[in-house]
Length: 398
Image 1 (cartoon, helix red, strand yellow):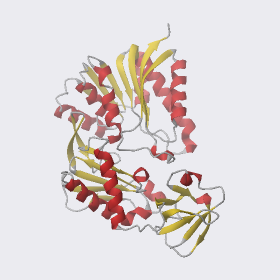
Image 2: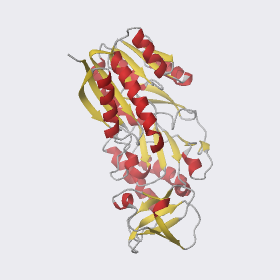
Image 3: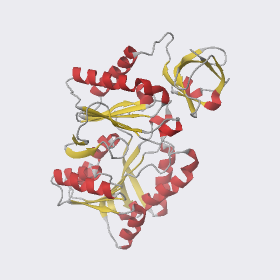
Image 4: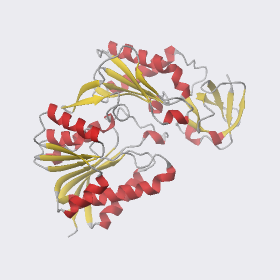
């Protein structure tokens, strides 16, 4: 096994509990290896730091699998990690549909696995985890079966851009026998069809499960605007909570069609209406028309996926939040979030505060939340904290 030595004073993230070593933190590599191989990681003075897989094509050159000396990374080790991930979720979330493996935060770097009812969706994004992919899937099926959860099929959605950064080809398709890729799930008492083949990411955003439930108290008898509705999840939770009318907006025609279908299967077609439009263009028009809502929900996609574009992202978040606040009636409610880990909690909070000042609104914070516990936040692994979710009451300046 090759030995990678990090530079003096480097790999602080790894030493504090994270899982990554970047290319500019590496001093020497002794021994022969191929990208994707497991290597030993040593500090500058020879101190053992862990075992991880290497990929010199990636900025994230090392991803740690174990910090324990003499660990053998084999099928038994993988099953142990999988069992721990499932056991954690048994005690923290509703497992009918949830994220079962969340990469580094479950100590299996570079892979996520979502469960939608009796279907698994796998996304592998790191070269070194690829040889363990099928082992992880089979271990999950075994452990879930032992816990009374039968898995009917598995679909792979390793079609993200992250794979190209690792020097890997995108992969998409069935693992095992084919099945109908339109899967019916239920979350918070709301039914959805999830398109695991062509939906965004793995088909559905499970990380907002409990945030969707958190808006219920504000939505009874309310007029609600749900921006960036995707397949209608926040909008339909508002309906379930007793909203009198809900408008969902998304730029994707496919998403709007799916949202309308989801409204129909829940019996909400008379309450929820969905519109295909650019939110940035629509909100000023609604303000001009004098529209006012009891509840406005802002759940945009990540405006930034790198540190280089944070400045522009701040402008985008500020704009939609100040316009969203203008559309909330005095004493109404705003639910707003960011799903980019580059948009830190501090920066997101500052941006919302600036937006409120710009439109002379006062905010009373009801809740601050993050992602659902099946997307655990591993301290020292900053990338695992990405979702920030606020609920405010919006009050006109008096």
